Amino acid sequence: MEVFTCCNECMQKNVFIGIDVDAHLKKTIAKTIKPWQDLPIRWHKTDGLHVALLPLGWMGDDDVLDVMHTLSTVSADTAMFQVHFTHIAFTAKDPHNTDIRDAQIARLVGEHSPELHALYTTLSETFHTATHPKNTFKPFVELGRMRFAKWHALETYPAEHTPFACTMDVSALTLFEVANIDGVRTIVPVDVCMLR
Image (cartoon, rainbow, N blue to C red; front, side):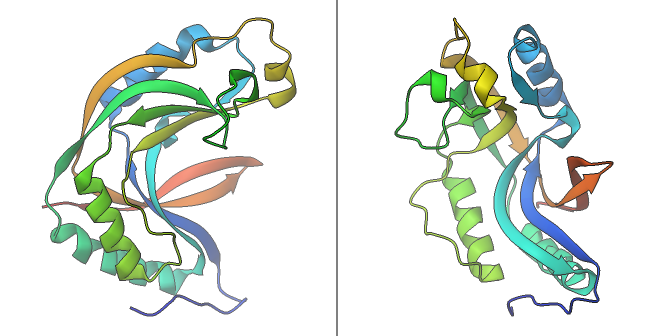
């Protein structure tokens, strides 16, 4: 498959491939983070929660249609599987920084998934993306971003890790668009491709 390009006149979309979080898990997450609503965190809307797999960047409508066709082929060749989540973490972008005062992201973190790693590798090769090879793939769901100045000024912090054991069925791949709706960054599903 060729690398996607598009003329400036085309309508451009910023798209990525991911896994939509199922409705039951979204409700469970919403209940779990409710006690933290007063923390200085910009929580993401639950309907946009996802596991990100592969960024594709900006592309035109015709290229998006090509992606949808190719993604449906990959999905038809991929068996359904499960991923296992273990905890919610407040972490810095730098994985070596373990000081919770410097945390920037609240995320649901999972165990290494061989199936997810194989799927990521297949997608990277199929779409010829310039990504760094991964030896493992641990799924995560970004739940929110810290309001850094207010977060850093807190006198007390929640635990860095909160147990959250759950299993999610992966039965489809979703092509998402990162859109700006009324000035708000919003994750919008463009197409859903069921796994076999």
